[in-house]
Length: 105
Image (cartoon, rainbow, N blue to C red; front, side, top):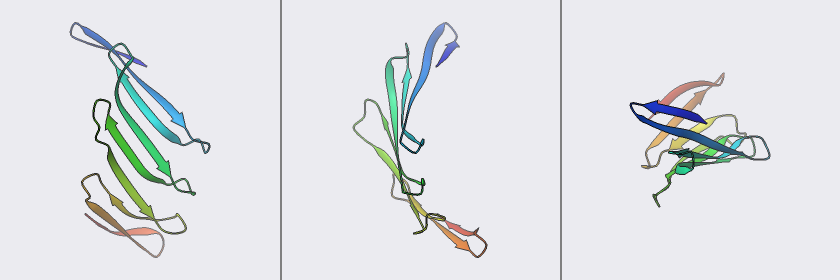
């Protein structure tokens, strides 16, 4: 919780975190105003290796959810591609030695 003062206005910014059984963030809810006005919500999903596979965000008053998806190699070691909320794809090419060789937007 953080009290913010700007000019003559004062408000409280607050975040509430929820974690899954693997201690990874599952949900973050953001508040402002008196600390009770919800402004947005972020939800995270993970694969069995603990890699984030989806991150969804939504403004509190909006029915629209913006989701970013990430795909990994079958062993969970390498990020292969990311698809943003506008369906733009970023492809990651890994070469020997686990170094990023190419990133295509």
